Length: 258
Ligand SMILES: [Zn+2]
Image 1 (cartoon, rainbow, N blue to C red):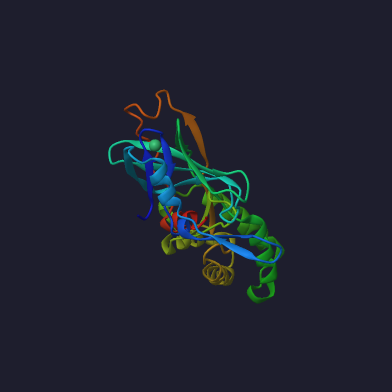
Image 2: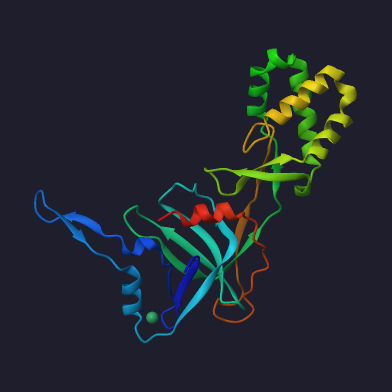
């Protein structure tokens, strides 16, 4: 039942089954006596909708859209589900920390804007200053390198890099390292701006700071917005045109919030 959402067609209510549905809760019966309350949320859903037609919808892989950090319990997210032919946008939210996450099909499409590529200028400068003695970076060279790197990255495409990390604070943000041949293109293209020794040191600095969200890695921001659908969600032709843009591990993070 992984990444399956149940939908009662009669009531149009959604339920996302998880192992947490059977976890007991506890409350004080008396002053010091803790009472265990058993739960079966899936059973409750099925009992409530007994005799109604229930369908299983698959969560579209990579379709997680949110402005909220993964660790925030009070939140509002969007995802897409499908019955194999039609696609629906689902809002998942919780207003209070004590309440369960709720799911609802909404009459919006999720539209992804073009990814924005940025360098991590401030952290990059700090790291270069910290390593200045080791690599013989001068203040002038640090400023020149950051300026040229920023210009170079502004002309790159996603194909020029490999995504290798994501932000825990913003699901729209991920990090990517330059492909080796792209890094060499950069160093060769600007070799006339530095000494041969500087270029060697820059190559080492770049390769030492290219893991996960390290300072040389490119920050990729993927903005999205919700566009009202002209037709209601339960009519035909609601298939989303937006393609999933998020990686598997982000989706796994998403499902771990319960
Ligand atoms: Zn029902």
